[in-house]
Length: 138
Image 1 (cartoon, helix red, strand yellow):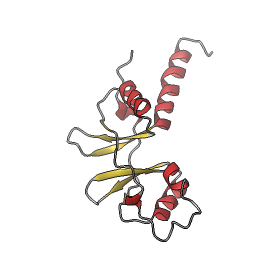
Image 2 (cartoon, helix red, strand yellow; image 1 turned 90 degrees about the horizontal axis):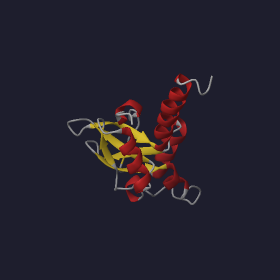
Image 3 (cartoon, one colour; image 1 turned 90 degrees about the vertical axis):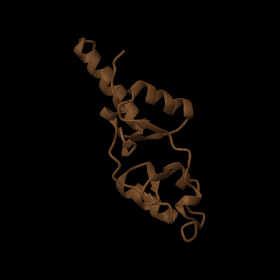
């Protein structure tokens, strides 16, 4: 078993939304940036996360003018450290049935986000590369 750290496949967090933002702003950010998980912040720390699934459940139902991100964010955020084992973090995503984890540095500051897509990319890179190196795919 390889000892690969989750930081190797972590995506930097480039977009964060305020807890006071309207839900349609979250939808716009997700659509414009082709992302499915958007951390929610109070300006200092991550308070929760809102997913594309959360937003799409309400899309077209007249929510744009009144509903705030804080009203639909998931406050139960899986947090891991960048030095944690990749396999263990992937297991935690699966076991907790969540699509992402916030990755923290050694000081507890946000380092990035690790999503199910990142886990799949890791799986492909690790196993396809290993198979190729063993000549299974040549």
